[in-house]
Length: 221
Image (tube, rainbow, N blue to C red):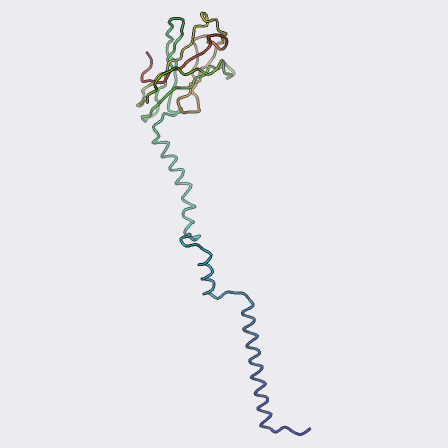
């Protein structure tokens, strides 16, 4: 083989080196592109696109999550303190002296404010006769016609409702002798227990209904 002149050999080697450098550069760029790692500017654009305008970031929402339960509890507590209605725990119940007349037996059921705040009662109390085992005797009393009014009770003051039924000796109703009268203040669920000492009450048969009136100020007629 004929020998290649020296200048031409250097030129060929130089061209091969340039071609190899270009190939390596192209491979390097392709590797960076295929990794899928976004550039910082691309990442910023992605967050901005996924997150609606005005949406709080995790740093913004953390204080709300921490304060919401305490705020709710505080509101409930404040509501309980400023609620004008008298609650069962703030009242004491009693049954006053019976007032017989015209074949009727009538008793004032008295609710007294034992708390240190002023509260109100409105409407009819619930009432139920029960025996020693807690079983109710007879149906719930009926509400007598009337026009309820709000009664404001300062500490120590009372409101009363009339509890009435026909005398069993006259009406001939079936009777039972309760041990306790359960009295539930208006709009409350928990009753107050009052010892019943007035004897038998009608629980069935003709003329066995018991009635209760709306609360009014005082301790009875």
